[in-house]
Length: 70
Image (cartoon, rainbow, N blue to C red; front, side, top):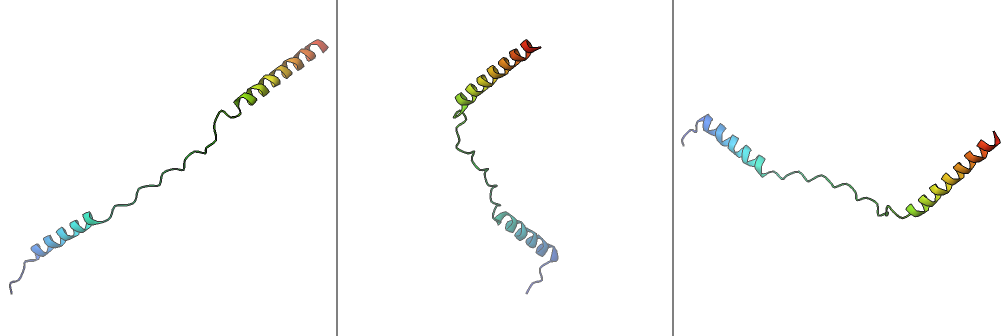
Protein backbone atom coordinates (compact mmCIF):
# COMPACT_ATOMS: atom_id res chain seq x y z
CA UNK A 1 0.00 0.00 0.00
CA UNK A 2 1.38 3.36 -1.02
CA UNK A 3 1.47 6.26 1.47
CA UNK A 4 -0.42 9.31 0.18
CA UNK A 5 1.31 12.64 0.87
CA UNK A 6 -0.46 14.91 3.37
CA UNK A 7 -0.68 17.80 0.89
CA UNK A 8 -2.77 15.65 -1.43
CA UNK A 9 -5.11 14.74 1.44
CA UNK A 10 -5.41 18.41 2.37
CA UNK A 11 -6.23 19.31 -1.23
CA UNK A 12 -8.88 16.59 -1.48
CA UNK A 13 -10.43 17.61 1.85
CA UNK A 14 -10.59 21.23 0.67
CA UNK A 15 -12.18 20.25 -2.66
CA UNK A 16 -14.83 18.12 -0.96
CA UNK A 17 -15.61 20.96 1.43
CA UNK A 18 -16.06 23.39 -1.47
CA UNK A 19 -18.35 20.96 -3.28
CA UNK A 20 -20.34 20.56 -0.09
CA UNK A 21 -20.70 24.34 0.27
CA UNK A 22 -21.97 24.72 -3.27
CA UNK A 23 -24.37 21.82 -2.86
CA UNK A 24 -26.05 23.37 0.20
CA UNK A 25 -29.67 24.42 -0.25
CA UNK A 26 -30.18 28.16 -0.77
CA UNK A 27 -31.92 30.16 1.91
CA UNK A 28 -35.64 30.75 1.29
CA UNK A 29 -36.64 34.17 -0.05
CA UNK A 30 -38.01 36.83 2.27
CA UNK A 31 -41.81 36.84 2.57
CA UNK A 32 -43.56 39.54 0.59
CA UNK A 33 -45.33 42.34 2.50
CA UNK A 34 -49.06 41.95 3.02
CA UNK A 35 -51.28 43.43 0.32
CA UNK A 36 -52.97 46.77 1.03
CA UNK A 37 -56.52 46.65 2.31
CA UNK A 38 -59.26 46.53 -0.30
CA UNK A 39 -60.86 49.82 0.70
CA UNK A 40 -61.44 52.20 -2.21
CA UNK A 41 -59.94 55.65 -1.73
CA UNK A 42 -62.79 57.67 -3.24
CA UNK A 43 -65.74 56.12 -1.37
CA UNK A 44 -66.48 59.10 0.87
CA UNK A 45 -64.87 61.99 -0.99
CA UNK A 46 -68.19 63.57 -2.04
CA UNK A 47 -69.54 63.49 1.52
CA UNK A 48 -66.27 64.85 2.89
CA UNK A 49 -66.30 67.67 0.32
CA UNK A 50 -69.89 68.62 1.17
CA UNK A 51 -69.08 68.62 4.88
CA UNK A 52 -66.02 70.82 4.28
CA UNK A 53 -68.08 73.31 2.24
CA UNK A 54 -70.76 73.34 4.94
CA UNK A 55 -68.20 73.90 7.67
CA UNK A 56 -66.58 76.68 5.64
CA UNK A 57 -69.94 78.42 5.15
CA UNK A 58 -70.66 78.04 8.88
CA UNK A 59 -67.30 79.63 9.81
CA UNK A 60 -67.86 82.48 7.32
CA UNK A 61 -71.29 83.18 8.75
CA UNK A 62 -69.90 83.08 12.31
CA UNK A 63 -67.16 85.50 11.26
CA UNK A 64 -69.74 87.91 9.74
CA UNK A 65 -71.89 87.74 12.90
CA UNK A 66 -68.88 88.48 15.11
CA UNK A 67 -67.83 91.45 12.93
CA UNK A 68 -71.29 93.04 13.01
CA UNK A 69 -71.60 92.70 16.79
CA UNK A 70 -68.32 94.56 17.49
